[in-house]
Amino acid sequence: MAMTIGVLTSGGDAPGMNAAVRAVTRTALSKGMKVYGIRRGYNGLINGDIVELNARSVSGIIQRGGTCIYTARCDEFRYEEGLQKAKAKCEELGIEGIVVVGGDGSFRGAADLSARGINCIGLPGTIDNDIQCTEYTIGYDTALNTAMEMIDKLRDTAESHDRCTVVEVMGRNAGYIAVNVACAVGAEAVITLEVPYDLDKICADITEAKTSGKNHYIVVVAEGVGNSEKIAKEIQEKTGIESRTTILGHVQRGGSPTVRDRVVATQMGCYAVELLEKGIGNRVVGMKDNKIYDVDIQEALAMKKPFEMDVYNAVNMTAF
Ligand code: F6P
Image (tube, rainbow, N blue to C red; front, top):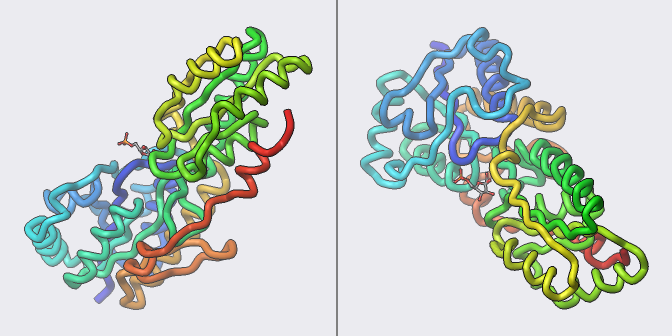
C-alpha cells in the first residue's frame, strides 16, 4: 500500500516554508503517497488539526511569506503524554513519516517522535540561520534582503539629519543576520553576542570620521545583545551626534521569499520525501559545501557552526 506522510511547520515562521510544504506535498503525490498537512506545528498532531493536501491545496503559495499550515510552539510535545497522543493520531491516520520544518526545538520533537516509531525528517526553517548542522536555513536570504532594504531607507534619513542610526536586527541567539546585513549596507559597526564589543572605540572612530567630514553613521546591533536604545544614547553622549534607534522586529520574518529561499526549500522538501520513502527517519536535511545532505538529529544538535569572523572584521576593522 502507498505510504502516508505528514508535513508541519513549527517554531518561528520563515519565508520559504510554503515552498517547502509545496515541494513535500507534490513530491509525495508524484510517488503515489497520501499527504496530510498538520496545522500549527505539533499542536495539530496532538489535537487532530490535520487536513489532507492535494496538488491544488499547495497552488499559489510558493511566492507567499508565512506558512499556509500555520506554525506554533508546543509545550505539550516535550512530555511523554503529548508524544503518545501524537503517535496515536499518526496510527489512526496511517501516518508513517513526517517532515518537520523548523529549528532546533522542533528537531528535538522530531527525534522524540522518531524514537517512538514515526519517522521524522527535519528541514531547517528559521530566518536566523542559527542551526548548527547547516550552512543555510530556509528564510535567511529573504530576511537579509528585507533588513537591507529597511536599513538603506534609514540611511536616507540619517544622512539628511546628520545622525547616527542604530538598528536592531533579529537574532536572539546568533549574529548571522546582523553581521551580513551590516556588511551589505556598509555599516560603520556591528555589535553581536559572539564577539565582545568596545563602545568607546566605536565612538572614537565615529568622532574621527566626523572630523574628516562624514555626516551619518549606521550601527547594526543583533537582537541578542539587547541594548540598542542604551547604545544609541551612549553614542549620542560620547560623540555629540544625534542618534536614533530602530528595532526592525517581525517585519524581517514576513514577505515574499527570494529565489534562494524558494529553491533551497524546494530542494530540501524533495530530499526529505525521498528519505521517508526509503523508510529513513531521525535525520535533519541541511546544506554542506553548498550541497544538500542529511545527518542524524542528535548529531546535528551537537554540532557547532563557525561564526563568520571574516565578514565581522570586514565591517568592524575597516576605516570609515
Ligand atoms: O525566527 C527567529 C526569531 O526571529 C528570533 O530572532 C527572535 O528572537 C524570535 O524568533 C522571536 O520569535 P517570536 O516573537 O515568534 O517568539
